[in-house]
Length: 92
Image 1 (spheres, rainbow, N blue to C red):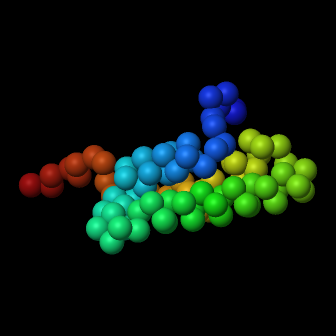
Image 2 (image 1 turned 180 degrees about the vertical axis):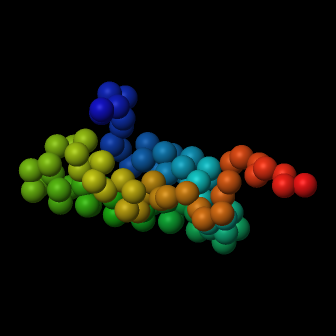
């Protein structure tokens, strides 16, 4: 279901991506931050997402459908491998 408060402007999407990367891609986030490449990388990811969305809009998708189809390609990346939010059971 569409989020009625979703904003499609670049600044809002960069903030969304920043929060997402910090939580789900912490190694990448810290590496990019230490290399002073976090903001340029977020900007590029947003640009690629918006361009893919625009292409889909021109093909007849709704704004939300285009977002759903493209958001995980460049911006809302999957959780980093090995990132476990819960402590594993102690077998001892």
